[in-house]
Image (cartoon, rainbow, N blue to C red):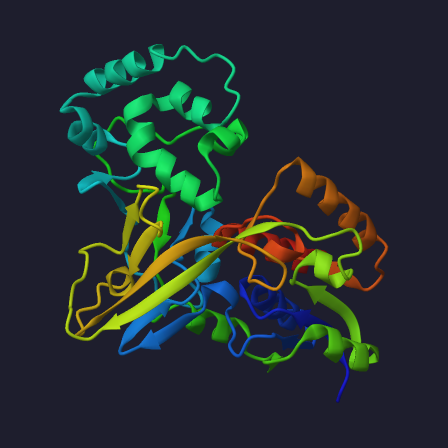
Length: 366
């Protein structure tokens, strides 16, 4: 094999942006990934003409115009606006909490009426120092919204009762006193026409890519071929878990193609907020791109406890894991030719725009 300036471990968004920027600097990159496809968790797979978000729904949104302009180099974005709905015991509510939500819940019609109702509910508890997530939610929004739209969903997501979760998880709850179902406040939002995989393909143009390749065996046999390494896998895995495993929550997806159903739920994202229903939401992928083809694809999302060997999704940034991550950071600082990036390499959940920001910053520094 020839020599490369960089070995990029991970063909997801972070690694692809980094490789693209290095190529612009005249550097050579080899990108490897253990999966059989590029794109990491934003990979979209075409199923019967529908771009399926294989690893969960990804809706691009940002307030950073530079990032918006950057990503628009690689795809045309549609005008999709994320407006999820929640179902609780057959009742349907709009998210995020807004005047449509409050009208359905209490029959109020004006912001003043909604604010008064919320204050009335909060006053029943008079919680000044919340000791857990439940008390924090009650102090912010009162019993009705908490019971119907927060409690069950959160307990499923974390696999624990809200009384056993720290108050810090929900420092605030998004409340809008306007009739607006747009979930995000960011001015730039949409879905790439044709799916996210096409963006990664363009980002990786000019870089060599090896799939189905585990980094440990590959790097050990070829380390002399690379000037530097960008590692976007789990940072604790790189160091052979010498201090123990960082913890995550994970998700399982049950994805079904329904050839005889053209419109399953009428919305791309529908949350199910009762704890008794085992899945947190159903995604109907065709609605992300206003697709009118025959049939539909839906994905049921089931939160699960994570264990070593299972795909990690959401870092659990509590005191225990933060302290453990700091130990791995100290080890990372001793590495002379390896840099760490991405959700797993930095043990931090990133939205896509923040992933691009971080990758561009790292590329600028190297």
